[in-house]
Structures are given as C-alpha cells and as structure tokens.
Image (tube, rainbow, N blue to C red; front, side, top):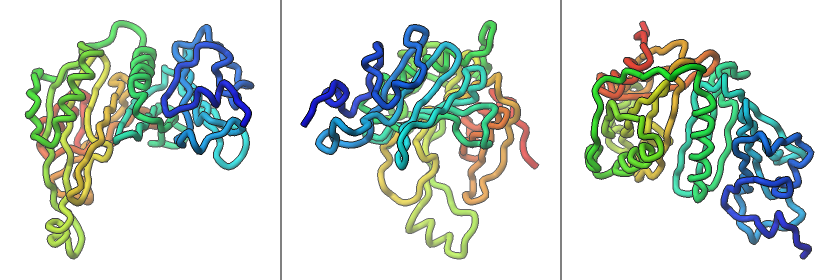
Length: 308
C-alpha cells in the first residue's frame, strides 16, 4: 500500500491546520488564506482507520474561521468534489454544540437563512476533539458580537449551583456548566429547571402510553452573558421511554439579533411551553415546563410576547 502524509495522520480527532501541506487534498483548490484565518480545522470521516486507504478523501469537512465569516467545506458523498457553506459573523443568530458519547454536532444559524429555521452551517465530529470545537465556538461567538460595547443582559438574580441541584440523573449538566464558566467567567446562571414527566395532550390511548412510555422534558440550565443567552440542555429536549440519556448540548443565542420571541403551549405535550426565538429568518424553539423559572428568565432576557 502506498503511503501519504494525509493517510499516515488520519485518525478520529479534529486537527488544526497551520500549514498548506496540512490541507486535505480534496480542498486544496479552495482559496484559503491561512495567514488571515483565526482557526482552521479539518474534520475526519467517521470511519475506522482499518477501513481507510490512501486513495480515499479522508476528511469530511474543512472548517475555516476567517476574519469576516465562518466557512465550511464539506465532502460530497455521492459525487466528486465538495460543497461550500458560509455565514458572515455579522449574520450569526445562534449556534449550538451537542455531544452524545462520541457523536458530536455543531450548528450555526443565519439571520438571512435561505431556508427559514434551517442551520446555515452544520457538521458532525468525533467528540474526542471537543476541546477544538469549543475553541472554534468561542472564536465565532467573539467575532459575531455586534459592534460597540457588549450590553449586559438582565437575567435577574444569579444562582450558585450545587452538583445535585438538578437531581442525580442530571449531574452532567451542572458539571458542564462549571466547565463552561471556567472559559467564560462572565456567564452567570439565572434559572434552572429539573427534568419532569409530562402527559400527552392528544391521542386515544394517551393515558396508557403515559404509563408504558412516559415522556420526560429534560433539565436545563439558563445562563446570561454580555449580549448572549446560553442554555445547557440535552440534545433532545423531550424523550419518551425509560432509556438513560447521556447527551449534553449548549445553545447560544445572540440577544441583539433577536427580532421576535413568542411563547405558546406545546401542541403534543401538556404542561409544556415552547419559546420560539426568531432572529430574522432564523428560528429556534426552546421547550420549558409551564410556569417555570427558566421560561420566565428566557422571556425576560429576550423580551417575549405571549402568543394568542
């Protein structure tokens, strides 16, 4: 088998690109200015090394945090070549990461989204490289801040969380909150809600299903910082059944770019409110327990208007 530098270095980790020879061969025709880029990462294909060979394109994405925009080059799976997704920092509405075991995902939403509600940038990665992705997130957040002095977001009184405040099943969220504030000490917790069982609103056998496959609205931690709202939560806000949940997710909303916030009752689940956060053509939904402190904090920060 012939050897290449790209093949020799291939593994599950997300690597930083600092020299032209480190750029995966698939993307070398793209005009990339490494000198001006804040960070460039190459994201490998999600295959084991034993299934790889030197003749394959081994990297699914090249992620470029440039001076003015975040650009992601993505390998096409069915045809040769790659697609380009880009969102200028001045149009970032919100961004999120989530990790479930080794499966990591990142999304960035654009206030001028071509498809309303759909992420402008999205890719998956191996969570062994979460530190690199968190570094990328911090760069995008910093670059996306509106000009001028960041406004202090009024979230009300601040909380100091104990490890068990969300119950024994959600210690991971409190641990994640502590990890976040080590990098961003300006963030403060303003509200939380624990996981709670919620009944179905519709269906002929909803009572039986509530017993056999109970629904859980998962816990969340709400934080605020200059010009930002942060929510730590599970990848799926609400699940059915009794399987344990291992994911941890973080959603960041750029408060100055929010154009409308609407609160409505969930159509499927009783005792659940959905906060729809709209930033231009981008929309994100945050479900919370009805009348919860977390819901009140989010609507206070974003200036919500109740629907209907």
